[in-house]
Structures are given as structure tokens and as C-alpha cells.
Amino acid sequence: HSSVERIIIPDSCILLDYVLEKFRAVVQGLVVYEENMLENMKKTRGLVFSQELLLALLTKGLLREEAYRLVQRNSMKSWQERLDFKTLVEKDAAIMQLLSHDEIEGIFDLSIYQAQVDYIFKRCGLD
Image 1 (cartoon, rainbow, N blue to C red):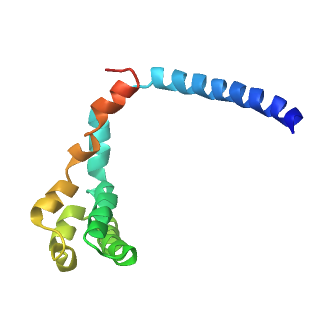
Image 2: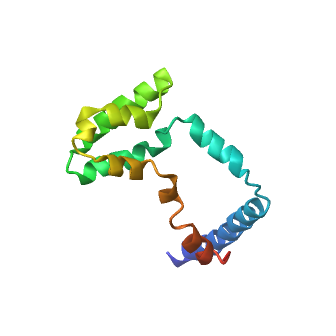
């Protein structure tokens, strides 16, 4: 099959070079509006933290289906009724039996998503 490899390997490398060049151009021209990003996150009323809540419930030993049901129940109510997700979670007795107030605060802390930023920048040569 070396005849196929003689075509595929160079073509793959050329394609990779093209994709990386396009990506570089996108990243170089990227403009970040931090205030807009934070405003957009606030518009979700905390729903961006639903995955972190699901993971916390799983670490407490809940089966995935049950944890998903608890998160979905609150997230759907938050979305449909335009209510704050964290407030709904704090009022949910089933969740509060498993998670402490401090754990809930940690789940809804935006800084957990920024914890590795310096490391990522360093790996990209942007330190």
C-alpha cells in the first residue's frame, strides 16, 4: 500500500499546513471584548455552570441519569421562567442534601474556568 501512502502523507501534511495557517490568521486578527463576554455569560442566568454542577453531583456518587435529571429540572425551569439557576439549585432539597453551600459557591465561581489560563498561554508561547 505504499503507493497510497506516497499520496496521502504529503497531502495530509499540506492540508495541515493550510489549516494551521488559516487558524493563525484567525487568532492574530481576534479581538476580544471582555465586557461583552461577561455580559453574555450573565444573560444565561448561570446556566453556563450546569456541567460543573453535574460533575459535582457525580462525584458525590449519584448515578449519571439521576444527576442529569436534577440538573435538567433546574436548568429548564431557569431557562423557561427566566430565573437564576444558582437560586433554583440552592432551593432544590435533593441537591442541597448532597452539596454544601460552599460547594455550590465553588461550582458557580467563574475563576475555576480561568485557573489554567497562565499555563495555557505559556504553552502557546504567549507568556
